[in-house]
Length: 85
Image 1: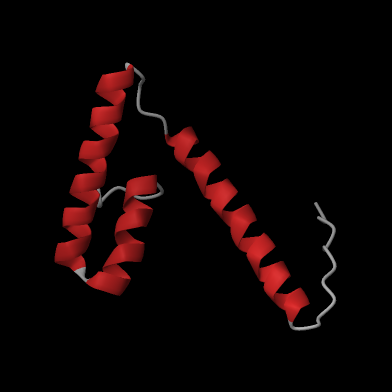
Image 2 (image 1 turned 120 degrees about the horizontal axis):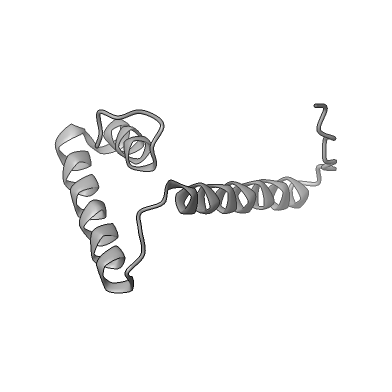
């Protein structure tokens, strides 16, 4: 799983490897896989990367709100940049 690219578990592995080392990261990914398999079997649902993408977006939104709150505590004025697409 860690060799595949652009998957939730692969990204989790590379983030953790940078902080804790390869051996601990592999153990953490194996544990996470077991938890995912247990949930899949218990609830009878298929594996879906989209669920992890939604969770990632939620985490990003939470991170942005925290950064904005911290900046406002420091007395900075924060404005939202419009998307230019």
